[in-house]
Every structure is written in C-alpha cells, then in structure tokens.
Image (spheres, rainbow, N blue to C red):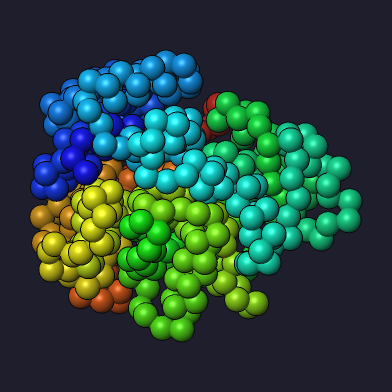
Length: 423
C-alpha cells in the first residue's frame, strides 16, 4: 500500500504519510477549508501548505457529486492509486466511498460508512440486533416532530441525522421549543431528517478505535465533560478513562457495533453514555475524533492516531511511537458574552511546560458570542500530566492565570460595567 488518493486530509495525515513511506494525492474543497480555518487568507494558507506536503493536490466542490467523482477518477488514473480513502467530515464521505468500491479501491464497504455516519441508520441496525436498546422515532423534517410527541414522555433528545460536531442536538422538554430548534437547524442550512430519542442519563464517553482488516483495536476511552442543557456542548475531554469494568463494557459494545456494521479498516469515534441500565451508544463516525482528542491520545499514550490510520491501510496494527505522559485533557474556556476590554495571562500560560496548545480566538474589541456548538466555543487549552487528577489541577492553574475583562453589552441608554473574568 503506497499510493493513496485521500479526500480531505489534514496536515497531520500528510506529515505522517512521509513516516509511513506513503504518497498522498490530496483532494480538498476550498469552501470546507474556509468553514474550518477561516475565510480568505487562513484557508488559503492551510491549503497552500497541504499542497506542499502532498504528492498530488486538487481542489473541487464536495457538494457537487459529479465534480468530486471526476476529481477522484482523475487522481486515481494519474497517481496509480492503491486505495481511495476519505478521512475528513462525514457529510461528504459516502459518495467517495461508493466510488472507491466501484473502482475496487475501497478500504471499507460503502454500506458500513452509510451505517456509521447516519444516526438513523445506526439506530435501525442496533435495534435490529437488539444491541444498545434506545427508544427512538424518525421524522423527515423538524416540523413533523410535534406529531411524534403525543405519547412520548418528555424530555427527549432531538437531533439532525446528518450533522456532526453536536450541531443541532437539543434536549426538548417542552414542545414550545420546536420553533427555536428549527431556527437553529436553519442557521446550519439543514433541512433534512431528524431523530427523537429517549433522554439517556449517566456520564458520557467516547471510544477511540482503529480497525485493521476487520480486527477492531480499542485505543482507549475518553471521558467527555458536558455543558449545561439543553445543548450539552462539550466543555472538555480527558484521555484516558482509567481501565476497569466500565471501560471494558464500553470497548466491547463498540467492537460489537463495528462488527455488525461490516467496517473493516480505519478509525472510528463512538460516543456512549453509561446509563443505569448499562452502556448505550449515542452515535458513531467513521473518522478520527474532533476536539483535539487524537492529540490527547498522542500525549497520553504515545500513539500517533493519524499515523496509526495510515498503518491500518497497510495492514499493520496501531503501535505507540513515543512515550506517553499518562493523561491529557482539553478544557474549553467559558467566558461571558460581551465585548472584550482586556486579555492577560496568555504569555504566562504558553510558557508552562505542560501546556501543549493554547487557543484564544478573540482580541480586544471582539464580541464573545453565546456558545451553541463547537464553532462558538471560547478558546481552549491542552494540558498533559501523569494522571487524570494532575491534568485537572493543571487546568485549574491555567484558569487562574487567564485574565479576560469583558464589558457586557448594554441596553440603549444604560452604562455597562467592566467585569473581570477568570475563565
């Protein structure tokens, strides 16, 4: 396995390919890059570096099935490809997977990608096999949900079947919330099918796996720290959850799900709640986790997840390449909305030896928005330590150093006081 046509490879994949002795022809969408990295210069710089790191490069429109198919076919012919593989966002993954299967260059049956990346299809598969039972209903549009609520005990969780990153997921405890939820979906340009599910209680985790030709390797379990209802936007992640009966159950359930789906090779990120009745799958995706979780895995265990995915394509099991610290976590800052008057402590935080990454996406004069999804969070810090407890203490040290002063938005005719905030 040497020549790979890869759709939406991030820089780390392209860098890891060099270590694995692989050649990558990268296919990207400028609009997708702009949605992730910022319009204009930020996306242009990212794509320019991707083109430099890759052995071949093309831009196309992921929403134009014919254009994407043509770009893949051209790359396959010009690059003498051994495999076609999509490693990015699941929204555009199914079409390339079907084409790869048609060309005889697929790492997975397209049916497995369809099941893992579609929340409704996954629920149907699990229900068919009586695995991870969860009560649910399906509607073709959010406006149809009201008809499903007559005999349903509230609260329930409502979610779009085809969006990622916690977008549009809402705890619904009053039908009056439906219009507000519909407006949120519209803000994402989403007009598709939705799910209504029973509200699962208990701590939430994600299981990170890498599959190699049908053998599913559980890399570890990540504890997810959730924000307040009704949106439950994650406020942080910690890896790994200490091993025990619970983590063994989480891993075993994930492997069962992957086996039922027919998934063969590559990463999966599976979210599960440990309810009083046992583990229940929330959703899964045939890709690496977001929110810097692969970085946490690398810091904690020494396993480079991107390199492990490439090794899996070549038929090799995941193997740590570096010593791990033992534990790592990401914490998202939670600032009040308003206009930033001053920011302090960033230089001191970056100088801390246990801080791997710090992001503060705002500057003085910027307005801090309300957090409604991963795109509107208020920056983050990644820390490592020898234990989960030590990473918690180190995150607290960072929060003590961060000094953000915010002026709340004032009503007309009112004055506004500057509030000093420690994130």
